[in-house]
Length: 188
Ligand SMILES: [Zn+2]
Image 1 (tube, protein in one colour):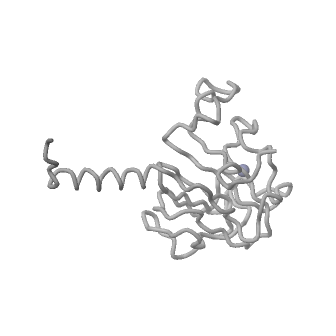
Image 2: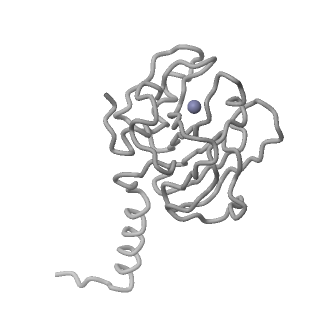
Image 3: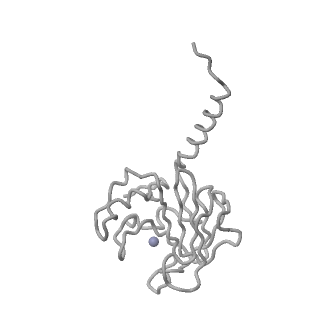
């Protein structure tokens, strides 16, 4: 029998363990908005045609000022403080967690002061408060947290989307996670 070379085997096992820890996502994430559950969002809004694209996440409706918390441990990879316009996500934060999944929280009325670009956040740490900044800054739009999950590892169970607007729309859906499924809520 060949003798196992521990000097070589141990680092390989450790690296494999770290890789498996990193590549396997959380089995279930909480709702990011305090006090909210499956009744605070519309179950049909993930990948709903919206404007010139598909709605890539869900909108969790809550009173302005309700605390939004990170659903995972991760690194802040995007942070934007809005300057009063009505475009895009307004005040938004994106946190990169395990398995290449990036969690995006938008339209917040404020971002928590200790949230810094490239800083670490813990699951449950407040990252901001529900608001209506960015393209939610309209009279007909109640305050909400737009929540979406992007992934670079294709999510095959999503199925490809229909082609609606552009050539890549059909494939784009593979790179988003349905937050409703990730939170363990039913999609129906
Ligand atoms: Zn939205």
